[in-house]
Length: 219
Image 1 (cartoon, rainbow, N blue to C red):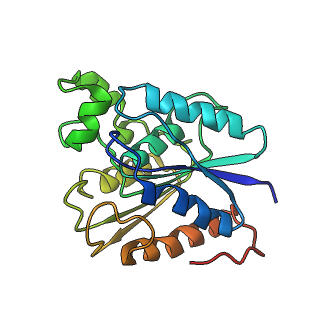
Image 2: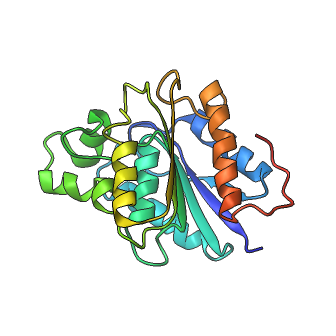
């Protein structure tokens, strides 16, 4: 089987990188037999600095892995989406796992993420250009999304549902799970909703052939 690498992108509203969405996640993925590491992408800086940093890491990872995916949380999920949907062939991720992601940068955007990435008075055209739902095409790479229906910080209707609808309209491969009670935004992988998401993510990775059938992994 070809070696698969996943770059982990913690959330934090583009203001910081949440520790619980970083190394613990990479360690879990390594337990599934994958190569995985956390990307310390720059924070508190405007576009395009964060995505440029991730594209550099994807290109670097291709030297040792034939398949490179990204897994991101919240604002890191937006960044993971950008890594899947934009950039040149060597810079674009082969698949993405987006956990309660920030998707839109338009009128319904998560204000904190948008203000840091685009500035406090953003150009609406730039907001549209950085809204993931506007970047989907028929050849977009496979995407897995999960969110909580009770997420008040990054509402599912304006984010994950919107992105999944764009994938469906384009006929691009995707899978969406909405958990009725996540409890809060930013649960990571160790609270009950996060533990449930681990099993869903692992099943999807296996179904797409990214995890070898013999890998035991833990849920």
